[in-house]
Length: 227
Image (cartoon, rainbow, N blue to C red):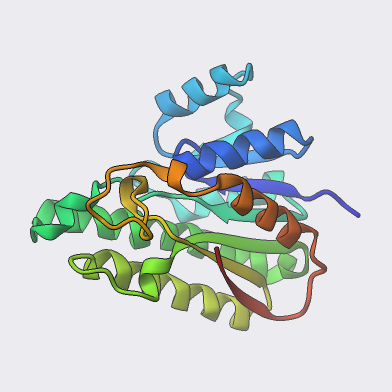
């Protein structure tokens, strides 16, 4: 079985860090799309790795779609793209219709991920049979929590976009819906709980992602997996 390269967006968040460490420790070639260089350098330092610009692409504003596509063309042949970009906002802010918080949520949960996916499309046109897309979504799009309509709607919109890409580009897409929300708050424990994602077993997600990567490619596939 050919071991594909792994491209991760949002490598410094809770999920992204765990996945980055897992794939590095298991011999995968990992590239990242990052926004905060200081956080990325700190992550690399923690696992005794040097920052190599050719392995990491800065997607902080303004995002250049052509440049991301060029980065893919220069580095990847058979690869898995895993989107781990987080919300960047604490959940409690959503109880008040704060314009800044809402705009930040739109940017982090839909605008930036959509630009990245659009950057993938020219590459997918010729490499769809060698590519998988894995999204870390939220159960909130299925069970709308009170006060989180903006967040949930954005997650749902992104899922529809992923469905469209799977259908129109014949790409394998797997959308993992996890019981967590911005700031790592657990859906199962309620939005008033300020516990972080320790409430969610990250190993379950990692093992499911590994199984998805090892699963044989099919012509067209969009799958949702609820964890």
